[in-house]
Structures are given as structure tokens and as C-alpha cells.
Image (cartoon, rainbow, N blue to C red; front, side):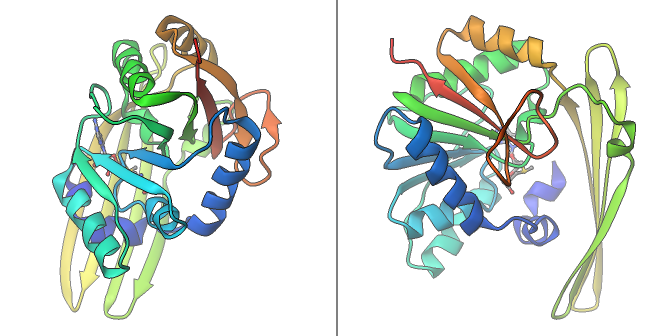
Length: 254
Ligand SMILES: C[S@@+](CC[C@H](N)C(=O)[O-])C[C@H]1O[C@@H](n2cnc3c(N)ncnc32)[C@H](O)[C@@H]1O
């Protein structure tokens, strides 16, 4: 996925989150739902993880994993510049092991969509379950499910400007197999950096799991309880996962 090999451009193109606000919400969810005191966080598919940078600033023990070494190097560089410590490890979130256990795991920004089969979802849940302390939380941001509103999938474009740098972002999702919930995500970045133009394009297969498929997988994994879909602004729980939700699971204690 070529855009993820350009962490700086990726970060700027998708820099619409407020990590301070997000970490405040994590802390609220933790105090309400975690059965254990939370001191360590694991971010899977972490990318430039502004969330881990904020968590490290608040004194938490932080680890980021990603399949792309360039992303990890970029995150470490940012952490060092802020005199923060973040551990990183190259790992595929569909199948990994960890000797260390964490109190809170997360997967942000719809990254869960890259898990494109039930087999991989079960393997992912098993990997996360084994490295989470019993009673700890697993937060998934933007679990996308069966669409109710086709217009949500119409192409989007936006412009990001910094001194000497302009990025025009094009984002679209095309349906590939409606029955199996398979789609193709296309991201295009038209970059003009100090007068030099670059065109970066990536296409990736993603999958939409229906809530029932997801519940079945959680049950089969035997490792998690489902706590709910939450509106990420208000933390109110919703009956179905709405766009931009926080999906919350808790590692079983027995
Ligand atoms: C949508 S970006 C999210 C990055 C970051 N978490 C954020 O919120 O901005 C997806 C990230 O997942 C990583 N990724 C994609 N497939 C992966 C896999 N199978 N295992 C681990 N990381 C993966 C990509 O390299 C990229 O950094």
C-alpha cells in the first residue's frame, strides 16, 4: 500500500482527528468499562499514531505495531522529538504474537476494514485476545457495516495546505461483491511539495462485516464480551454501528 510508505504525506492528508479529545474519551471508556487499572496501550496498524503520542505524554506505556516499517520509524522519530518513549514492532495485525500483555488495545480510523475475511478476523481476535490482560478493553474505531445509505460511499475529496505543500486527497470505495461485503478502497494523493509534484495511489480490498457476522466471530473467539457501539463524540451507545463509531470489546476474565 504505497501511501502508507509515505508517512508524512499520509499524516497530513488524514489529520482531521483531535488526539487530545480522543484520549479523553479513551480514559472515560476505561474508567467506566475496564475491569483493570490501565497503564499500557497497544495500537495496531498504528501509522503515525497521534493517539499514542498523546497517551505517552500522559505517562502511559505505549506500543505501536504496523506492517509498514516506514510508519514505525516515523512514529519513533516524532516521539523522540517530543522526548517521549513509544515502543514499536513490525507485525501483521491479522496474525501476531506478543510476549508482553497490554491493558488496552486499539485499532483506529477504520483500519479494521483491511481484515477481509472471517478467517482473518478470527485470527486477529485470537491474536489480540492473547496479548490483552483479562478485563482489558479492545477499542475499534469506525467498524463499518452493511450500508444503509449509499451516498456515504460516494467519492470524497479535500485539500490540505501547509507552507510550501499542498495535498489534494481523493477517497472512494467501490462495491466489489455486495453479498460478501467486499469492497475496493482507492486513495489518491496529488502532492505538490516545494514545487515538486507527486502522484500517490493505493487500492486495497476491504470487507464490511454485518453485525451478526461480527457477533458470531466474537462468540467463536471465546475471548471477548461485546460492550457496544458508541458514538465517538458523545459516547452514547447506538443500536447499530454508525459511521465513526467506537466499537468496544472486553477481554473475558475466565
Ligand atoms: C488507515 S491507516 C491508520 C493509521 C493510524 N492508526 C491512524 O489512525 O491514522 C492503516 C494503517 O494500517 C497499516 N496496516 C495495513 N494492513 C496492515 C496489517 N495487515 N498489519 C498491520 N498493519 C497494517 C498501514 O500500514 C497503515 O499504517
